[in-house]
Image 1 (spheres, rainbow, N blue to C red):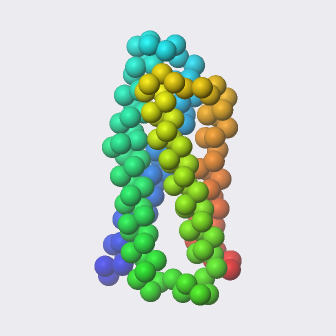
Image 2: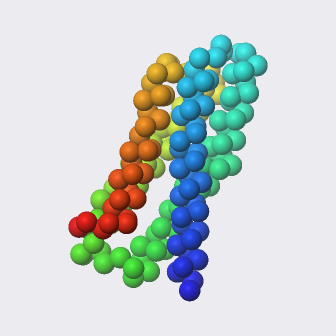
Length: 143
């Protein structure tokens, strides 16, 4: 019964994490087009910082904690479940993407953004692609 709750909280944490990973680059798109020092830019700074610190980062940490508990609970056969190794690698990439978002949030906060809005439109697709691959691996378990 406890593992069912851990799975539920893992899924909830992932949903919150993905919401942040999908929304933060969208904020960057609009922020990149706003003049530095403007009221609009300052508002985006607050929104980005709060989204990262209050939702996205805690959700990532919870996803990892609950995920590792599940991974070491005996549900995964580490020698036979090849899909899990691929999924884990993709989650590490998703975590690295999170790190880039944190860096870009700091860059915007210090008015040091060097990327155009188009860049953020393109990178906004990265978490979607990774999420699709991860969900397919977990549900289908092809290897």
